[in-house]
Length: 167
Image 1 (spheres, rainbow, N blue to C red):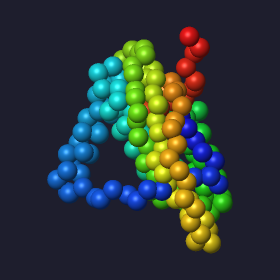
Image 2: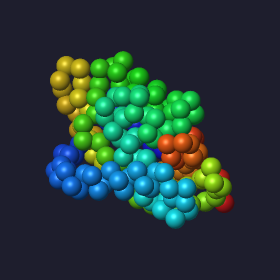
Image 3: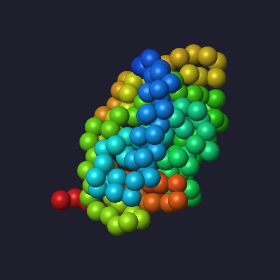
């Protein structure tokens, strides 16, 4: 999973969806995250739901929100918690960040674990510094990575991210 440095880092946010569509989107996201077959049957949707949760946690600089994307205590959790801590320590925040899944393919899995090979791109966003200065960052095409998922009571979560094995 691509992680730019907190000092590095904007597109305007899309218009807010109506309350009805937000409710439908929330139900759809919840459905895919808790669906035991999602890694195999809906890999793209599952990774997008987790990417959306990750972007929200990073933009909010809220470690508590990582529970909606990462398995608590896992290498993925630690990586994202470190990014959030660095953003807070520097007094930097990100605006307009969105993560877009370019592709996602089921690689392997069981009922409680899965590997999905995915490329997640970062949209352009703005770094807002503690003094209020704003620095635009360009969109960035992500690398193809393997997401190791675990299924917990609340649904699928990312436990680790790694480069795919050489073929």
